[in-house]
Image (cartoon, rainbow over all chains, first blue to last red; front, side, top):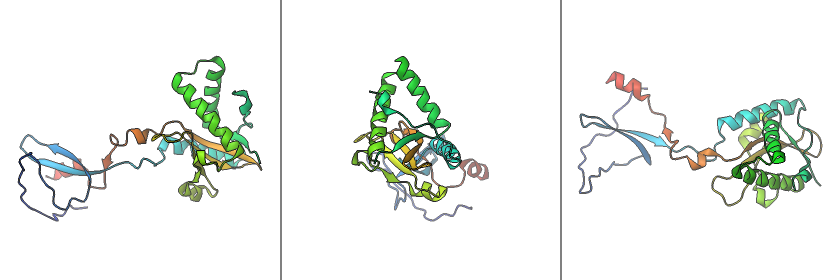
Length: 82
Length: 131
């Protein structure tokens, strides 16, 4: 997908050496500073903390494969762990 | 009504056997001991009342739709930001609950900031080449 310039403006650094992004659509950016002075910002998003990790999904997948065949362990006796 | 708790094979059963072996040999580390105690407590609750408030049980719709039966998630701990989770389903036999996965400590909650990833923007390497 080609990148299209949607907005172009000059920004001035304030007394605390900060730049203001006008109408920023993201909360987090990866900042890359080059020796030439060029700075590139890449928007970033946080990983959903409730997302199920791939490793857990794989365990669920394996368990369900056997579950559908009726293959499960023997019932646990939780009284053994007092 | 009390349910029978059975474990999914092979991963959950292997994980349980490993913990059980260490428990019997008294070689559990403090972390493992803590987890095992909480896990036993959660499984006891699940056995007696899967809808107990302490478990905060809720259905995972995405998984239920994918597998064609209800898949639930319950928490091992309470009031902890990175609480461990149990994924389970009713069956395969009547009055049985199968533990499909045990996630002791979801790593994403504690390290979510370090695992931030790029949103859908073109690959930066391709962009650099074209510049």
